[in-house]
Picture 1: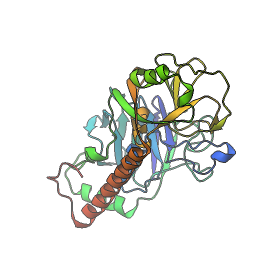
Picture 2 (picture 1 turned 180 degrees about the horizontal axis):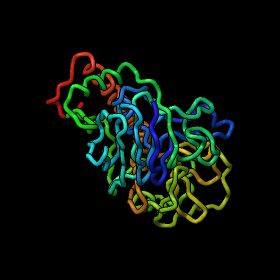
Picture 3 (picture 1 turned 90 degrees about the vertical axis):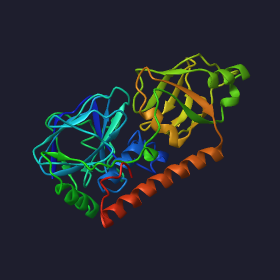
Length: 343
């Protein structure tokens, strides 16, 4: 099974949940920027959570499917069509062979995830199919997909085949979706002027009390120079009380660093494995989708949180995704209720 790239969009890469266990050798984790949305997309088409998907940034691709394929398009403010017919997103969609899926720019979110039944088959490096653009490895030959590329798809799972069978029963022209969709409880929260929760880091005390107050009181604007490595923020200049350069130490996704110019950067999927900038704190794991979906010009604030709160939020998200997974399997086994709005 294949799909052909007619237009790669602004930046579309193959990603899974990341390259785990290699940071000690200096290898970035990479993977999807918004793990929650990508996971929901995979569950909707019956894939394993770690199956490779397409991550589209700002403007999505145009894809022609050579075979009948089950597809899920998930993101914020989805604007997608199949041969000109709008598809709703956040639900499985059966696309007939020869038809074209187009994902256009979203007026709201920054990234859209396209999962296909069986997953995308791409270069697996160190146990992951994720594309690491800076290292030029993994994914589709270590680069973004572009016009003329042909991507191979994996074999559909039993869940994928069951959902395709049910959708074939419905009268349709070239693409058909169920009436139900993934509920809002499993979708990441996002607002163009949202807030993210923050755990204090080892260097927060290096800011003066006034600077610490400013950190939490200010609104920061997302810089156009942001990328998959880090989200750069523009706001009040923060300065440390002493100019001693901290020792370089391990960092991770969500680490908030203070740059030499007094501005902040939040490390994201392709971040380096160590950093010598002051580490002011750590964004809650469950709030990272808010950052992944933020476009240049969007605004955000930091709010202080506790470790217990971070753990509770992560448990709730994990449980929500597990409930979705089980509900989908039960529906496959006992039938879909088309009157149902969400699952």
